[in-house]
Image (cartoon, rainbow, N blue to C red):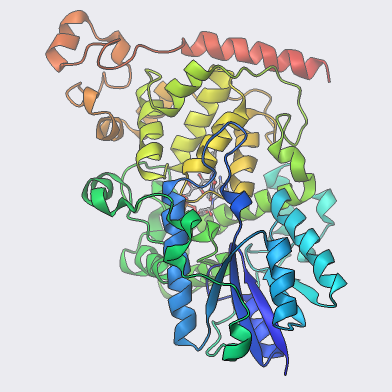
Length: 497
Ligand SMILES: Cc1cc2nc3c(=O)[nH]c(=O)nc-3n(C[C@H](O)[C@H](O)[C@H](O)COP(=O)(O)OP(=O)(O)OC[C@H]3O[C@@H](n4cnc5c(N)ncnc54)[C@H](O)[C@@H]3O)c2cc1C
């Protein structure tokens, strides 16, 4: 009788689950285990909850969905509390598993855990088999070793495109043989709803109406909801055909795919999405938009590989370039930024959306990250940690990789690039609908004035019911002067390299 254990990590799905499929092929009985690690719920270095309310709820829902889907094909999800490298070897020994199967992750903490797990399993004669299925491409299939990954995305793309194949996703297993009752009783699992760490925050159901009204989408965790979203975005709403034109939007469910939350928790496999895109190209249309979905998923892969190459540097203040920049940690300015009170409506609307819903568009993320680092000169890690806490789609590689990139300590070819939020607002929110949606204080200000409220005369302020400095803040800094100060700092630091 061969027994194996599948360790579910950020891969809470049954389709394209190489680890589970391998275990089912190789074993007579399979224990499916998810480990709730207390260390993953600690506070970040600047003191924020590592897993804020949106992701916590999404995680709970994803686990429940996985439990129910496994149940339908005979399997059982055992949810246990503890550090994986400690509890998994114990469970493996108790149930006499010969192999533990899991998926590769790239972020430093996750790889450290995996290495520790491997060595403790090895001591007890159990092996660890690691597959890859959370990226489009496999790191091992790249036409270069990971430490020769190009520092620029374009070079990476040119090297792999048309050369490295995206593997087809695996179908979900039709049957997962569960452990016999006696063996199963040896696993110290707990019902999902009884685990304090998972139920810390009250459900948002109480204020669901307001939340759903204002959010771009009601994100529901789990593979079932993730697959339904793919079906909806591609097939029912037919939005993929115009994705390239709409993807820089900020209002509504369909300007972009919103796949990120399901991808981050592994409820969706990127290869499954890619397969659907290919089918869409065959059955509906193949155009720049369909290509662009692949292009964006490739960015996601790229950041995973960047972290695989540069490891912990991506999470440190100097970033992967190991830049010595003179950041400040001004808490008053930082609080103004995170609470949406900088006086720049585009920045404030985005930060309020993040805090109220756990989501922000890509356009918004680029702008707020640029403002924090290139105008306020604040330590980019404070922003990255705030995102880590709140984002429903938080993914360590994409988050820290993008923060490195935007703040200037990562892979950006241009020396000092910043986003002018007034210009960005006029390009991407010309009517001011987005800022009015999130900043009710500015609701009556005409569209052509809403992005620069500090220019309103006393009489206009009175007319539109908003007193600057009272109802809505005056700008925290002058845009051009502050960017210039930061630029000098950057240039000085670079000249010393
Ligand atoms: C400062 C900053 C922090 C970010 N943090 C995260 C994060 O923690 N998790 C995360 O998934 N994305 C992050 N992103 C990338 C991007 O903003 C989101 O992936 C995107 O907004 C999610 O919306 P969507 O699924 O509708 O994207 P779509 O436009 O529909 O794109 C499809 C998919 O492509 C991938 N993708 C798109 N853009 C990027 C990108 N720039 N980098 C990596 N992958 C991308 C995502 O998986 C996304 O779901 C960050 C970007 C910035 C600038």
